[in-house]
Image (cartoon, rainbow, N blue to C red; front, side, top):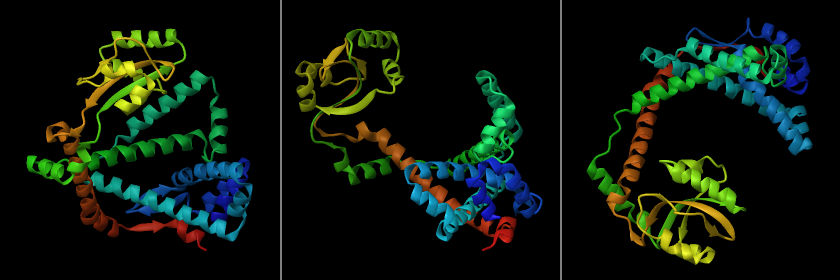
Length: 340
């Protein structure tokens, strides 16, 4: 069966015919059973084949020789077969996590997700004026055996898994808290991290070649309750931390406007910077010296919470999920008929 998978990658126009044969080889379209719950061949192939297709295309573009070795040598086939096995194991683990969460009362509304995904796809096709038959062919050529329906099923499954995973993570880590003593200890242990060797102005900068462009953006930002959000709508916005020396080398006249305490402000006009016109939002000012614990309390608390959540999650996986996984009844039809 694995040879059929690789052949399908190379001859994608024969995808449907090839996997009609694969369906027969896989035990009525079943890749695995996990505690009696079926992982279909369509779910498995929808995980593997689109990646095969993309990998094949990318590698062929970058290095035709490597592509030839990957697809037409025993070593390359073994690598692809190992990827297939790992992909199936990933699906099995996802299924087990969903089953564990279900027992804990956490479950995604797959029907609601399916309705949302279907509507999104249909709306997109209508907007682009694409026929469903054309969309089917597009997705078949990308590696989805049944075209649009296979793609839709994969998106729904991925969204459901992510929703369950996030809910389970929150349930497992919800008791992560930080004490004042822990914040102080973390600050003392990492005091050098909060030393500021020289004063810095932290800002968002948008550069333009023409004054009129810069002014129109500055005007829009000056009228907005949150000027920084206006600058963030531009992909080319630069967020950075600048020393006094760096600003002096670009425009000495800006030093007084930038190196001062602030709660966040848009500079009062368009300025020149590095021979261009700039709209600048000053986020904060860091004087030289050490930041006090009050200045970094929020950052420390966030770091400690994330560390504790990560620890709780790892403990849960070892003490709760691992035994659940080890006691599971898993039948791998794919592995049984694929063999070496």
